[in-house]
Amino acid sequence: MSDLLERLRERGWRLTAQRRVVAEVLNGQHVHYTADEVHALAVERLPEIARATVYNTLSELVALGEVLEVSTDGRAKRYDPNAHHSHQHLVCSRCGMIRDVHPEGDPLAALPESERFGFTISEATVTYRGLCPHCTAA
Amino acid sequence: MSDLLERLRERGWRLTAQRRVVAEVLNGQHVHYTADEVHALAVERLPEIARATVYNTLSELVALGEVLEVSTDGRAKRYDPNAHHSHQHLVCSRCGMIRDVHPEGDPLAALPESERFGFTISEATVTYRGLCPHCTAA
DNA sequence: ATCTTGACTTGGACAAAGTCCAATGTAAGC
DNA sequence: GCTTACATTGGACTTTGTCCAAGTCAAGAT
Image (cartoon, rainbow over all chains, first blue to last red; front, side, top):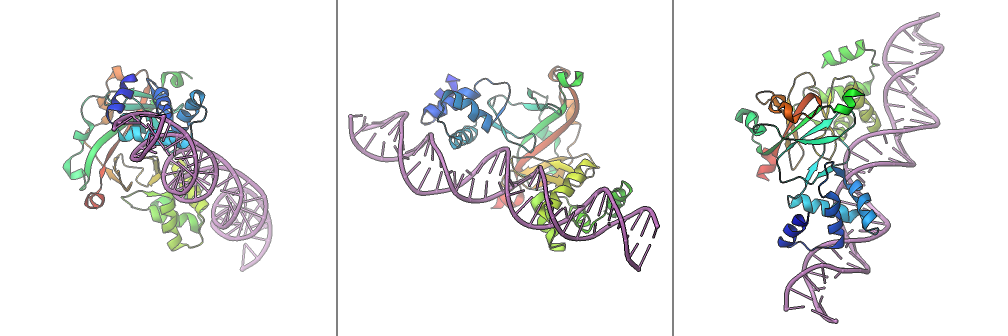
């Protein structure tokens, strides 16, 4: 994650205590937190950090391409720090757990020109849904 | 859509003016409205219909399997009346408009066994993102 | 045709998630 | 160590959606 802070500084990011804490919370997580979860964890390290700052910082990280925004249901968005490896998501329908997966091929190729309706398409995301091993057993 | 109302009546649904209007608004749309858009359109036909009633009715239609709930971004959920034909979605990154599309092949086939991590996968949804013709021009 | 009743609708209060803004604070270059 | 442009703060506000008690009504029974 020091890599991340390094990269950001090179891109003219001003490094503040708040931003450092948000980056540290995201660092190397296999689960993807909501903004409020990130805030709760950040408060443990820096009690006075404001909710708005966490939202601002997450938006900037997304805009810089360092973090991905994921919304698998109609609830809060989740933040995925693993933005540098293209991947898709496997979601447990029962417990909501998210796991990164790497399917073969390019999903964009499956959409013929006649099905693009004049859109300028830039991306395709695939969400696999099912039961995780734990919920299958239960 | 009289088919839909027919089916619902057979399942013990009480047919009210409000429910009829909501069903009519959804009927045969190739775009998918948000709940508030459905409400706005319903009000044109039945001015006194309440927002809560539209939310209730949409939830019931989803529970009955007649309509699909789609949440492609962190914003409002959209309602897809085309629940009986398998399809994927094309979403405008700017205005949020959704259109149904039919890609080739089965997206589930692209996920090798080694990437399934013991999940019992039942479904794969693909979301294509880009700018719609209107937002590309603007 | 009218009655009865339980299901439906209403509207306003409430909640969750996120945005906005003016005032204040501070990182980083000079 | 100054300066200043940029970041943070916290509270108000917006959007989307849920909840509830009271009133209304569809549809079967009489």
